[in-house]
Image 1: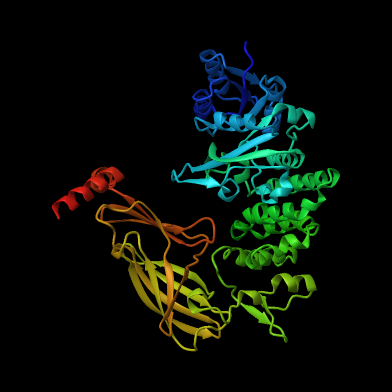
Image 2: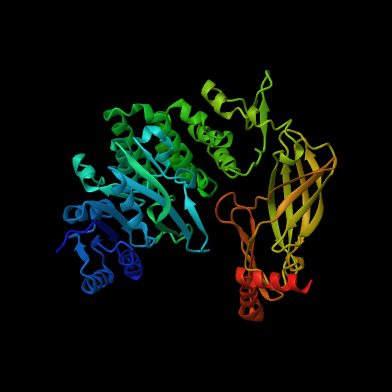
Length: 548
């Protein structure tokens, strides 16, 4: 057999349903001289039969089956590396795909100049919504060749091994293989590849389609989505220790702050967003695992984070775990704490006390958020629903508390409005917030979801009510946090099934879901989508202009 230009390894375990799609995406490549190695991690479903069928259909496909299940991605990739015949190598997971010109684009980069690997953009596709986005778009926005990761340490954030085509000689020269027996192997492998490469090329074109199921059931979720498992936390921290040791041993200690920043901003941040949904026992174990490692990180890595993230980190390190849960609900959304404390010098700290240690005071000092002086439209408040009572039909009665820790609102009742808009028109529900004590207001709102104005063609999707405050002719609109768990309300409104439920992830907002029914679902919405196509819209504009 002639030598292939590129070997693409497709790793698989118990994924008979999607394996064909992945392999077919390689078979359809515009550069056809490829070898496809299906590396089966000892599947127990119909995967072996599918793999054998694919190998029988196309001589470029080879089937490799491991003698026992390894429980990870490393062993299937390493075993495939042992038999790969091409001078260039790529990796593909069985639940993903390659765009048709991925091999041609990356191979062209290798043939333009001598490099150790080439990498391109990764297109993320949400399996629940079909929404597409580019993974780390700022890192792959332009074509460039770098002589070492020191030229752009931000690339530590792009730790996927599947977005790259490697020169086999580069991997063999450094004995670079995937670490077996651990998860998050890509992070260590990619860190080593970045540091060991003398030159690598980045291209902006998509070379990988990554199908993401963020809310998959826990038994089918990918490793990165199994954050509820404490073993998952241990694996992430263990890999960070291995990367740190490699940086020190290979003479790349100068990159430590960049790598630490990546861990805080990406890896820890993923767990931080889930903290509100964890119980006290889990939080305590989580703090036991991460705190010793956090204490080894460079101070500069913390200093590069937004203040809200530094607060959550420090509350974990100080074992103020219930407060860490509260702080985590506001990450990325400008949600205020319930309470702040000011010292004799006018420094403002998160929570009900002045931190005891100098390090805690530095991290929990939120004076830079300027809660007292920032413009009212961008002020920070905290709106929480404390009680939800079902009313008649599709209505609910809400008890809402607004925390104003910087005392921005004047003493006395405040005008507030609930807003929700599944279409162009909003439903506005005015109500009054009465003072309970300085910095705390409470009110009651009756929200009739049957009165929400829906578009003629109906609405399919989710909306989260907002709360608007008005003061001296200015308005402020913020999130409305709900109890993290409460019985969902399901009912019918005209032509739709409506569900009121907790968001279930992220900050935990009140969530309203509409599902079209009857003629709206079967006829009106499909017809509207057809009319709304760009070609039809252009034709309509041409006709309209001709009739003027």
